[in-house]
Image: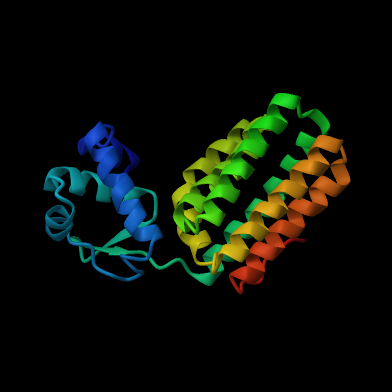
Length: 224
């Protein structure tokens, strides 16, 4: 499937399709629909009360993003994210985010710091409420915001295209309220060093955070 097909043929930019896609994402992130499970558009349409054409468009978009895959031409299944893929994503994130943290420590304004702290506050509220999916939304937004505020425009765009995939990966690492609060604390420490203008420590802490994430996923991260 081409990018053009996914984004224009099925009309996925309509509000109704975006709503359907958001709902399906939530089911995936919550593990209601699991890896290798077949996704039936008709069944989803009945379950969610959403017209089948909107479901079909939403599924096509998620397929283009790599969350779903088509087998045998017609069957749609949830793609299993392999350990190698997770390791690759973490390795790329290390290369990008360590530089992002260093750059942001050099140029961050008070407005940048305030925006990052607002996301951390939102993470803490979600953690206290034990809302894993909401927490992942804010955690993913925090990492994209780091790149945007560092003026790494292309890196930010790439990270935003990965948001859904990283939410699915990240939910598996958040075993408890304690872990969520720990992640928020790691984010807060990083912002402290960015605000202090400590480029080296900001870079080191970004690396340590990604290594900790890999550890929570029982994945070996490549950071050299």
